[in-house]
Image 1 (cartoon, rainbow, N blue to C red):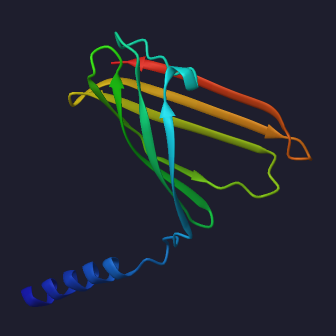
Image 2: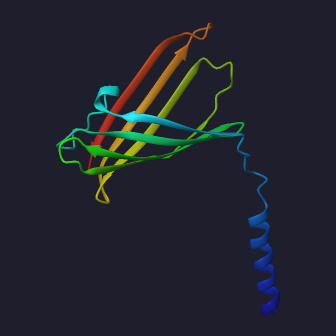
Length: 146
């Protein structure tokens, strides 16, 4: 009886590990670099006693219906030279091609010496007219100090 139970458990584990029917196949990837800098946007962080900036590398992957972003980046303090790690992961559904709106919300965290320093919240909204010209563009940026 014990052998039968072990065999059943192994069969269930094998079935879950080989069945990926609900997963989406990645159809493309790209790497994007951007600069986190006070000169490139409203990125001043009031929790810090100095300005931080640095390059962020995003690995972006796409399926037919979804978009996934995972970054790597270390920001540097301009006066102290201290390192601040920026972390976020973003998943989004891709809108239909005839959609006139694009909206995204992106939470980030900023870490210094393994300790959470700040939560950064970004909200983007872009609306297009019939000729694919941007008619509304909003960016909201909010910081929660820890």
